[in-house]
Image (cartoon, rainbow over all chains, first blue to last red; front, side, top):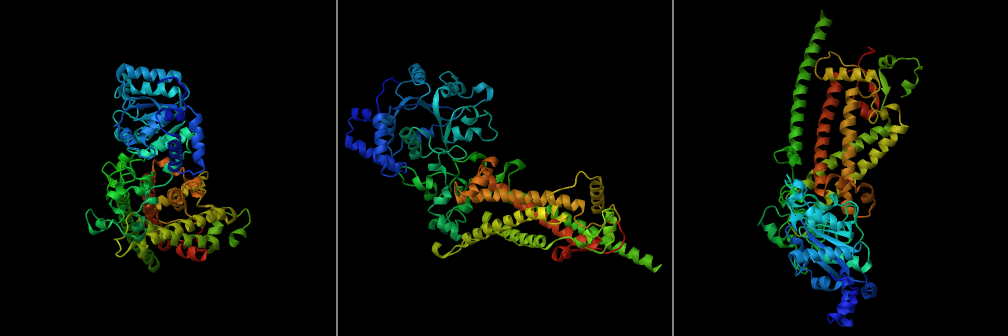
Length: 364
Length: 240
């Protein structure tokens, strides 16, 4: 909120952190970002010389699961991120102030740091009825979002809501909720999808942006490559059972107890880009597949509209009644097969009658 | 080809049709056809099993690699069919003019349309006698383009897009075909479309085999033996 120009290092020292602890922290951050030890001094240098980056964190149409995840980050600890690394100027969930006071903080920060702050968006704007399905601070969220985006340096789309639309954008999407890149087209947007995203992925993205003062390398769809370039399946610890052809055939069978691959019971690991199978959740304790349930693909575009979580061949909504590719294909092949059989029968009759006719003609 | 080339420029197509045998499918083209048959057979069976795996195998994971072998066969056959298809496109440029029939429909020719109509009538049992053709009949040509050329191209693009997911970001498969995935939505959508494409090709194969056998019996020229030996035999001397 304030306009002072403290560096990260000064803030940390002010909070009683020793230089030794500070250096340790830098090494740990380098490791968390997947960088070599030689990057630790670089991080230290950046933190000693750079001002804390102001972050404005908005909540649109969402369930706050992204924030719930974020505050559980262990490496780095979220308190380090919020109190030392960034200047969290506005976050209506975490900030102490409320009401007019909070809105005033938002205004001040947007004005003082115009063009320099990072806008973090959790949730998305609904467009139907002029955006009246999500009111924040007395105004439609879409207005707040557009205004905040104007002065932002970069935008982070937290979670599947901001990145893809998630549950509120699932068919039939009555509020016309859209991902933020549909309404903000002139700023770089980093998508950090997941419902919610992994805490360490969230803090990792922020740390990277502060340390190197640039956006992380993004993939074709705007996700940071360092966390979203591989599928859950590619690094799954149950992968050997997949390759061997050993599957959980039904819930609670012997194979489930043995921890076989969950492919046949609809695991979306093979089609989901996320870091769950490597970073895992809750300080690396576990992740869905480890807990015995298939991945539901929550970080993928439109995962709510991909049919059952428990089918490998998911249903195709366009056919009205829910059918998967095999039922559609087999039905079509059956119809064509019957058509061929009928056509062949008529052809055979025609061939025989014609032959008889020619024979008669020749005989006469 | 040789016989056709012997014709003087003024000779009509009817004169060609009066001949009893014409060399139509050159050796590389026939080889491509049968390589594709084998690869598609492998692709269909293994692809079906990737979507619906076989019952679990007993024993330790370290002693088994069933799914791995099935996927390996699928990917290998995918490469073979793709390289063969590229070779087939190349052959359309350097081969005889029949080699271009699959890719270029002569929609500007009035005669093609009237013969197409005749073929439709022949298949609806409305026309009494079929016409003679050296290459594809117009209906066959249209079907080959719509089902095979389009279907195969679709399967190659979606197939390599899915393969690029395993090959990884930055691989050439990702650079060339990776854009296909966001085009359809996400990976699961591409999987579904690739599966539907398989059924599309299954329907093509059913029809293709039926029509080839039927034409071999009922039409006035050879079909199946032509794709083996290359020569189109005619069963009568009437020109049309």
